[in-house]
Length: 166
Image (cartoon, rainbow, N blue to C red):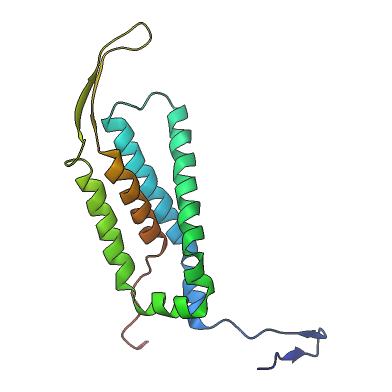
């Protein structure tokens, strides 16, 4: 394949990206937002239910934590966007991110009812008042959150199945 030459500028012009390449990258901002929001909300629910939420600075910490998880999910899934065979598979089998997302969400829900999940009580001391809360099982919560973030980062809307009639 030869790269076309633009006589006006005297430079080579690369061909336009394929629809698959555009689709893989065009949805990235929405995927980053959805991943950051879902991880932020999941961690905020954990902290507020377990009475770990303390100050406004905690919101910044939640935001930083959600950012790290979002960046990690993006970097782990980067081969899906860059490698053409993996990208073709990902775009042709769009149901798999939905299934993985539901598994991650189910794991988050299960982390509140199985394993070491349950209510706890912290007695008062000189520094802190008495506190009650409900703690999920971290051994289930953390991996489920990672699976949920990876799937949210790679969810795509379904392809159009109808021709444009307008």
